[in-house]
Image (tube, rainbow, N blue to C red; front, side):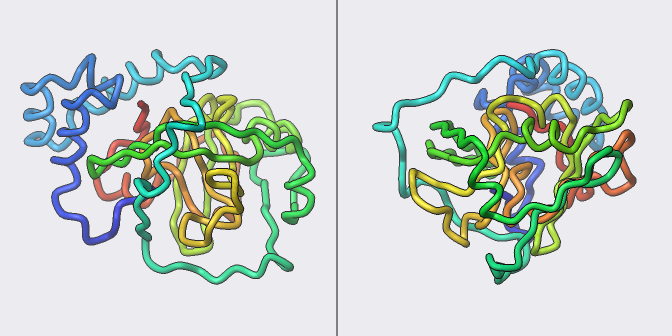
Length: 240
């Protein structure tokens, strides 16, 4: 879940999160000395951390999940980027476009007829809290396959109804546990948690999990704007 815009000192929280052991890249390169230097030098070490995180990601290896009994129904905090948008489910369409051979324009009924994937994972927020949640929805790899990306596609942008925007590396998008979710804890996804569709994955920090997703754009190169919080100094890869 994305941090609120008025969250104070986010980079310090990210460094604290690395020291607490949530980030694999932080475990390898996030010693106290390194995170201190990074905070003072404007993330000078982030490209190195990012490369290590990319190397550690196995895009086909599932992350161990939790039993349903481990779900923490009250632990997932609700926060917003700007406002909670009102979305008409009758007219809602998910667009998948960009450098693809078959752009998609899907209503929720079509999406919900596609194979449902359910998983119980830990959602980790950069602000220092976590929650075990069951998410259910469609695998992003299914949508990408349907859209038939052109050779050279390496990234995906996610655009939301509230104006939030994010970008992911394609291997993370294609991970089998990266979902566009429309269920939370076995029930329809609440609007406050991003209905009708939100990203959910055990391989990224919460600010990468866009809510109210309306468009996915596949591209070969990152644009100057990488993500709302990344453009303000947050780590781009944000792997766990």
